[in-house]
Amino acid sequence: MAKKRRELPFHEGVEIVDVAAEGKSIAKVDGLIVFVPFAIPGDVVDIQTYRKRKGFAEGRVMRFVEYSADRVEPVCEHFGVCGGCKWQMLPYELQLQHKHKQVVDNLTRIGKVDLPEISPILGAPETTFYRNKLEFTFSNKRWLTEKEIGSEREFTQMNALGFHIPKMFDKVLDIKKCWLQTDVSNQIRNSIREFCFQHDFTFFDLREQVGLMRTLIIRTTSTGELMVIVVFAEDDEEKREMMMKHLADTFPQVTSLLYIINSKRNDTITDQEVITWKGNDCIYEEMEGLKFKIGPKSFYQTNSKQAYNLYKVTREFAQLSETDLVYDLYTGTGTIANFVARNVAKVVGIEYVEEAIEDARVNSAANGIENTLFFAGDMKDILNQEFILEHGRPDVLITDPPRAGMHTDVVDAILFANPKRIVYVSCNPATQARDLNLLDVNYAVTRVQPVDMFPHTHHVENVVLLERR
Image (cartoon, rainbow, N blue to C red):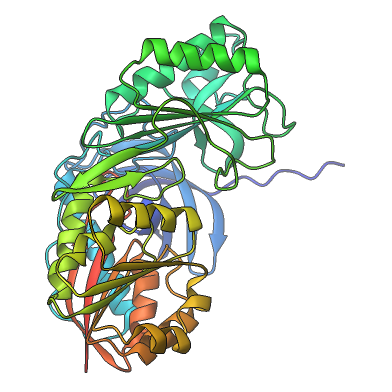
C-alpha cells in the first residue's frame, strides 16, 4: 500500500514582522520563527511551511491577505521567479535600513568586539541598470511559470536564454527584459535568441551535455565600451560564424566580440581559450584618470559607479602617506593597488588568479605606475613570514577577500606583519565579523562604513578600519 503523503502545515493571516538574512523575511507562528521570501514587514499572509528545523521553519507565501503600507510595485516582470532582485517590492530607503541593521547584527553577534558608532550606509547612485557584467544561460528546458501552466496552453518552444531558476540547476527562465544592465544587454540577448530560433540552433542540455549554444556574457564600462562573449558547447564552424557575423552586423557598437568553445561539464571559463572574433580582446574602465583593463576572465566590481565610492572610502580609511608600504591582499586586477599607488611609496598586491595579476601589471604599466609589485598564488601559501621579511612589514594592509573571508593562516600572517592600520573590505559581514574577532587580539575597530553595491538584493559591502592597539 502506497504511503500517504503528509499534508504540509498551513497558517492563515500571519503578519510579517522583520527582514532576515538572504533576502527572506520573518513571521512568527505559535512562537516559532518562519522564514519566507518575497514578503516585507507589515504584509499579512497565508503561509505553508515545508521544512522545520530546531527553533525555526521555512515556508512560502500562498496568499497575501493584506499588503504592507510600505510595499511598492516591482518594476520587473520576472520578479519572484528568476530569484534575483528579491527586494524590488521594498522601498530603497528601507532596503538601506535593513542592510545597515544586517551589518550591525553581524559585527555585534559574531564579531563580539568593541565597535565605534557605525556610519550610515552609503546608498548607490543608481538602483537599476547598475551592473557592468551579466551572464546568461542557454537551455532546452525552459522554466514554465505558474501563470503559463495555468493557461493550459501547449508549449512547443522549450528553449530559453536567461537565468537559472534557484535550486533547479537545469531549468532556465527565459528573460525578456532585465533591469540590472543597460538596455543594450537586453537587445543583444533577445536578438541572439531570435536568431537561434530562426536558424534552428540547438540550446544546451545540461543533463545530457549536448547542444550548440551554452552561455552568453555581456560586459560594459562607464566609458561606453562593450564586450560580448558567446560560449559554444560544440565546435560547429559554420553556425559559429553565422552567429558572430550576425552580432557584428547588428551591433557595431560592440568593441570586443569574443567566443569560447567549452565542451567540458561545467560553465567556468577560467581554463578556456578565448578567441577574439572582432575588435579588442579587452575593454577599459576609468577612475580618476586611471585606466583599468578588463579581460573576459577579469574580476572587476560589477557596479562601476559605486565601486569608485567604495575605493574612496578604502583610501580615506587607509590614511596614506608618501612613505607608506602598502599590502593589497586579494588584489584582483590591481584596481585598489593602482588606485592608491600615487599616494604611497610602494604597493605589494597578491591574488590567486594568474590572469588577474597579469592584468594588474598591465594596468600599472598603462598608467605609468612604477611602484607596484604583484604576486600570483594561494594567499595562505604566499603571505608567510618569509615573504613579509623579504618585502618589508607594511605600514597599511588592505584586504578584500572573497565571501568565505580569510583563512586563519592569513590572519596569523597579518598579525605577524603588524601593520599600523588594516582596512578590511568585505562582501560578507558575517565572515568579516569572524575575522575581526581573530584580529581583536592586536587591533581595535575604529571606523565602520557599510556600502550598498547591489540595490534590490540583500547583499551589502562593508569597510572596516582596524588600528593597532
